[in-house]
Amino acid sequence: MKIKPFGKLIILILLVGCVFGAYRFYQAHSSPTGAAGSGPGGIPASIKVEGDQGILGRPLRVGVVTWPGYGGGITANNGFAPNKDCIYWNGHKLLVQFMLMEDVDARAKAFARGGDDGVDIVWSTVDFWANELPGFIKSGVNAKAVMQVDWSRGGDAIVVDDSIHRIEDLKGKKISLASFTPSQWLLEYSMENSSLNPSDQAAIYKSLVGTNGSDVARENFVAGKVDACVCWEPDVTEALQKRPGSHILVSSKTAANLIADVMVAREDFIQQHPDVIKAFVQGWMEGTTEANRHPETAAQLLMENEPVYKALGEDETMKGLSTVKWATLEDNTKMFGLDGSEPLFDRLFTQAGKAWVMRGIIDNQVSPSVAKDTTALKDVYAALSPDVRPVAQKEEFPVKSPPPAAARTAPAVMSRPVNIYFESGRAALDSSARQVLDSVATMSQAFSNAYVRVEGNTDNVGNPEGNQSLSQSRAQAVVSYLVAKYGFDRNRFIALGNGPNKPLASNSTATGRSKNRRTDIQIVTR
Image (cartoon, rainbow, N blue to C red; front, side, top):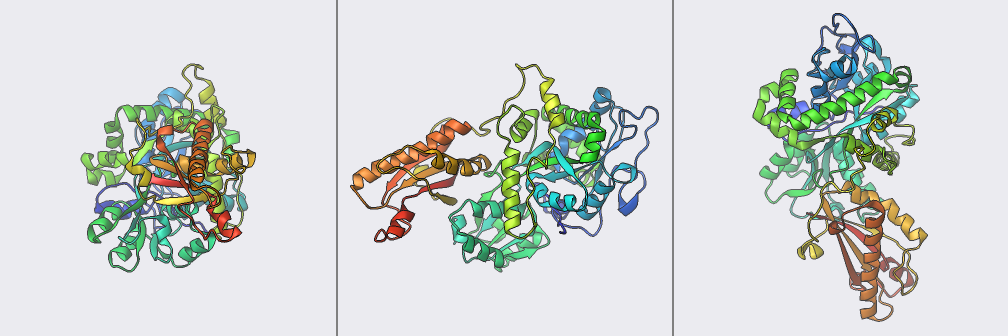
């Protein structure tokens, strides 16, 4: 399988759109920075540092792309080039060399080689890692995600015309996007968590207008060639400005726990140099703390080491930082379950893998246990005093009060019907019902910056008032279970009983009545 490039884009000016696009799709060449000379495939050669070479005996080589999400690591290293005036050296006796590697093919080959003419650690994302790892394994390269470095927040969106107000409205529409990028993942995840059936989704995929970049997808939308586009900034803003009546349907600002950057290392390197991996992880965490305290320092380092930021200047570079959240040890605790909680990584990785197999992008799915190595993170976590160890944050966007009345009737951007069995006349959840709800809990986690409306529905058999009351109790039972088990903020949830008033099918047949006895899990934008 040939993996296409992947990436992210920050909300900046049109001038740099093509540069950030390189993170998401193949480029004809790479643009290395922070290197002296060039090795095989245009990969920067190792930079030599005088004197003690540290715990690895040479600089650790780390491949990244133009993206502000790596601010923690760059701050820890005081730039891209290996040096001894930084957190990595002073705290961990580790020399680190960061390199811009926009060409995904060159990156993969350099990662497979490793050493002085390759790279030891490279970027990925949870969903892209589910896409990419099977190909690595097939070629004999076993590798693991060793840490989360950021969350993407707001750089990706589904932009639609005024005829589309729900994900379900995409049925029969033409959509343009850059294939095999976060754009496709955002669309895929949104469709999976909607009432679009597999045939509807397959038809949408069949009519997709795939492109090699966000700008082309946006151009197709602005020109009226398609009804919707999935793109990233600055193309989102331009699409909204240039096509009257257009609006954002779903964005990564709402789906705030959907796209996460991780760093991955080859398994043989991890086994041979566990001390280096631990120093890399711990130093990055310390750099993240410093970057969060002094974001202007991170911005300055970006400008000094990446030409595009130098061209943008400090104001625009600082604005770009708002599109990411640098991942702390607390974020990693939630992502990898360091405190014994269920790892969010496993849920996202598994769901992405299933999607890529279903779409024929990969042949087989890899277990999340094969895709990660949390040894270094656990060591860093265990070294802390128990009273200061972070716990997995249940909700990052707490709601101070219950949803406003308008949220009870506001249109949902997507609605996922869930078949939950209740005994006749009762609202108690049995084990099978709880298992079904466990399978959709990721939806509430991924769309962490949204209201979740749970609508209970019945058929028309029995007393209408009794059905209304019963459906309300059943919706409340679902909310109570999700809040109790997963620690969600109750104020994010709306329990609504519809009784028999919102049927999906005719109540005149047993099949129709069965379809109407359902629970809808809906996402409502805050």
